[in-house]
Image 1 (cartoon, rainbow over the protein chains, first blue to last red):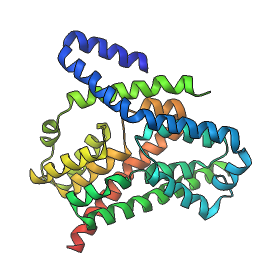
Image 2: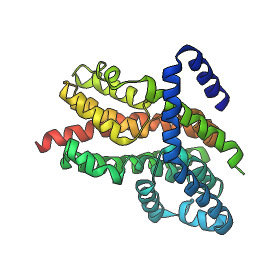
Image 3: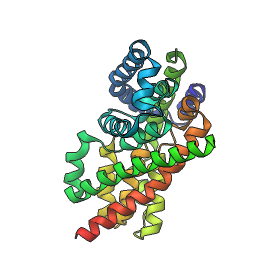
Image 4: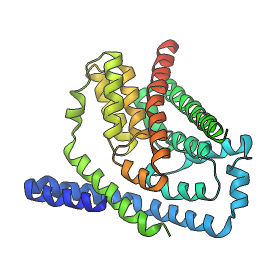
Length: 157
Length: 128
């Protein structure tokens, strides 16, 4: 994938050097912003690998996790910072340690709620909008998770 | 472990973000909306899906879209799919989670983009 992107940039530099330079600049800005989050994510991933065993993950986020699992997944999703793709490795790591896919889905959708940006959303679209928006996202995250659970159960039978 | 595989993917995604931010302008986006609910919702979800960036970018563009007459439903769909759908990160998603997970997640996010956006806009309208 990186190869294709680099190739694209090389082509762009020949065809449109001004914009290509700007794209590199924009990319570097994103990298600057994302780097601390990447470090946090890798740290967390390493931490999970070392300290938490499969049994703990399975208990809190696996098949028997119950209501608490959903709560953690949604809250964690809302609190998680930065772009979604930075969290993929960490989430896949949890999956491999026994976390349910349905909770991963819930986490990922709950991420649509961005706490730091809520004041700005309120100023642009009002607090009624923001309230309903956030509420329906949480409901959506839960519903998606439940759909995934149903699919998993059908697979097992 | 995953570091060697993940780092190039991350750099690739960031590279794509740079290209996108340079070549897709707010003007281009605004010209696509026409004010009708269904059309703007479809456009909103589509444009949001290919867009990348900080959430506040979608708020600013969304605000401008509303001023230009885009449907409130469409703008809500745009803002939502902006944060839940991402074409740019798909290859990485496929690579890390696998085909089945990725297809299902994006399909559900697509469907729910319409559902949540519609529910939100409708509720706001009801609330007056």
